[in-house]
Length: 325
Image (tube, one colour):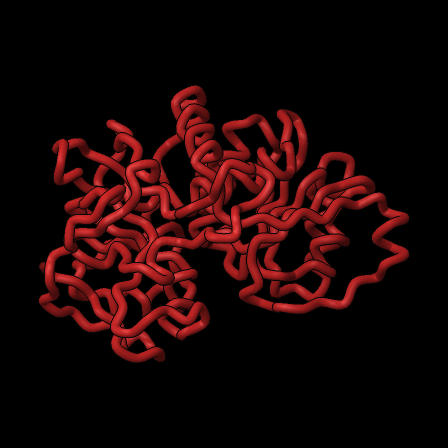
């Protein structure tokens, strides 16, 4: 089969298409003949060696295709071994494409519990783009932050896959959604999918500007922070608000004013990915609220995975980058 293989960690050029053996059938695993796979920033970290993946390695967490055993059209939940406790993943939890071969290939093997029917109103590219960002955003907003209709939500970094999905889900849930971005064009595109307004985080006091966008100018009930800008994110919250942290692309450590934090009655919630129950709840939510499919930025052929990574890393896209097989 055709696959994109990583034989050394490094830049995007380390991703090279090759012919590799088909997956060997194994008990408890199902082979999926993939039609598309989607990129995530997590894949960039895998490529750079941040997760210690075994080499040679096939990256990729997201995918959609056809079950080899039944012929069903399916999407893959890349949360492997979450366990029975929805509060947090079990010790053996991993993300598909970290330690075992991933979806940058014509076929992949996954546990049966990680397959769900492909939504009928999604194309193959849209279906592949849904799982990781969908379950991550859903868990962050609803399982962790308990976002309610009428509340206000600020999503940092409009343009990324999680951010665009969070705007779609938050708006569908009846929240007042605002965004931050480095680009006015991205803010306008976010408004086109449900955001009410936005501010540029390149401005020196963007948190104050964002806070003024919330009802009454009092700050947001929930701030979704996938970049690690906690200091500014907390300043954008209203008293008693909830900060949901799920990424560290901008900073991996931040100083925190402890007194301001507890006097503000803030909640700091960490989250990542989601359980099969979270994913089932996401799919039910999508059906109930008639949410549009994930926003697609660009598609590339499987053999051009390196170019797709370069595009993703430039950061000038809006929505998901997908490989077609």
